[in-house]
Amino acid sequence: MSANTKQFKSIGDDLWKSRNEKINAELFTLTYGALVIQLIQDYEDYSEVNKQLEKMGYNIGTRLIEDFLARSNMGRCSDFKEVGEVIAKVGFKAFLNISPTVTHNPAPQATNATAGASAAGGLAASVGSSFNLILDENPLAEFVELPDEALEGGLWFSNVYCGVLRGALEMVQMQVEATFVSDVLRGDETTEIRVKLVKYLEEEVPVGDD
Image 1 (tube, rainbow, N blue to C red):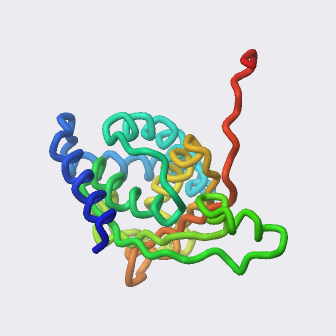
Image 2 (tube, rainbow, N blue to C red):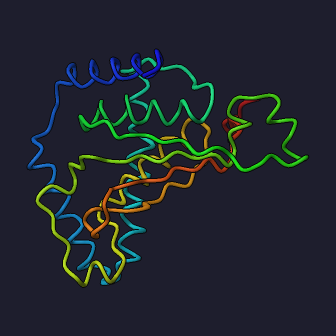
């Protein structure tokens, strides 16, 4: 375990311990489950339910990031690999008391057009790279068993995670694609989310400001 990884793990542990407003895990799971059931009844289309869960997560993520940055005092990450480590060791730990395993996937071979950015290093050179988060524990899925209809319809029960990740990272100038790769609720061996960096966003000046 690298020094940075140990540091991130320590920060995540401290944030969870210092969190006063912890919600009962069973209540959290049942409340989320009731939300998913309501969406299924409202839309009667599992692909649309996936979209709505992602959209809800996005809205949560855009707000959660402010609390996370304020409480963790984390600075800007040096590259997308470090982003993955911070999310797994600090973010998930601080809010859900879990620490997913993170694996990193390098960006595709750089083209001539991106060679300059790659040489410069940092986040610009990370475009196209990704990391996978493997959730050994998933608080949202405790006590959950999906019916065959939901499995056949393609429901990603915990798709809210993907939205949270997309929303939070967008607020710190990273456009990402976050998608489920597998889910034990669907009979897979692991529950795994892939997060891919699409591009680094420029900070926008608010309207009316120079």
